[in-house]
Image (cartoon, each protein chain N blue to C red):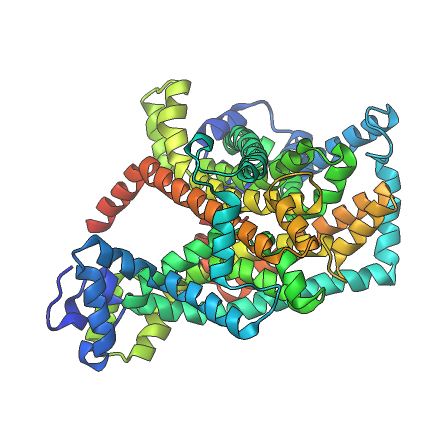
Length: 287
Length: 304
């Protein structure tokens, strides 16, 4: 998903209608900007929420008023303990991504290069990827305890497949003509890898990393809900047990903010370091 | 595939990646030839799956060395897998009662949640794809919604619905609707402008435009969204049952682990693994059927 304004051009019927529709005063033009429309959408949802809680459509235990939740968000954001818990989640996320990238990407490049290993690898990774990682939570709590090791083991298992598979596919789908040209120039294998294979595989590798970033956060939070010692999930589940629904809502919203921050940072890093992968990145779906 | 002596220079796309003279790596070259020219079906099956077998052997060896009650051997787990889930009774369809109740309730939750997501995601995704203004209005909401790790909503779902089927289903819906919606929207927005203009200049009716241009044009993206959401749906099905349920395969696993029946726990894990595998194979078959035109047209474009 890139800027919406660029995409409007792609859709002729609406574009034509928009151009023909009415005089374009400064106010109506401002109202048509993506920013204003987005604010409108968010405002509408908050208004609906307020309406539902003032009219008592939903029980207050299930849906506290937006203002109450906003105050709790402030409380949570100000508390040192909560910040430490969030840091723990972020640290696990970073570590699992780093471990996976460092191991799975080179492995994928190797496996994608050696034709004899390509098909068996793809089969085995597909098989492992079909298994929902969360099914191992009870077993890995028994095996690794409640600490960082357990969280890391599960998360890496969950995201290893997508990253490896995308690296393998990326390398495997290198344009054969480019390889022929490179070989006719008598480049060494390392040179071919660095100048031809890697640049053409990178968009696919980056897509794999982006999909993995979302799955990693889901798995980390699941583990925290089901019995890890630290993390944002443990806070949410603690307040559910008390029960303080206003804090639960605040925690969930802050988890969303955390996810948004992580994905946005990842996208920014990606744009900065690999500018030529943008086109490929747009066509991959985030999970 | 043309295997000439000078394989490094003229081989086709599959072996081209393995650059360099074949003589340096006789073993690998031999393996390549064996895998690509194995005539028998058994040979081909082996070429694809020897690594899977290797992995299972590794499980067996590791568990025998490790000797942990939490990590039983593969043979024990597989034996429990068959005794727990299957019986030699044709009238029951060769499955145990446990299989019917646990797997049945799990699958019905996953299916309900996923199907609701597919309907919502497709309708909303297409609507947002054709209307840039609507897309701009809900864009921040969608971005935020997909940033929330779906499992964080589990406590909220329990607050709303209690420990009921609706809780599991609603969680699966929330987690799987965004990949479908976003991919559908992207797919519709990404349709080639020339194609849209051509359709308009042909004065194509709205309904025909929808079925002939819009839907097929977006289908590769839609399908990739469906595939991602299927995986997430299974993850959420299991998590929600581990967290709060009174039946289902996730509940079976957590119950077995609490009652120290670790071999049974692993038999449940194996069952989920097999089910996940079957669903993905099924999905791949459907995908290959639906997207055959897409691959063929790409191949044609590539050959010219």
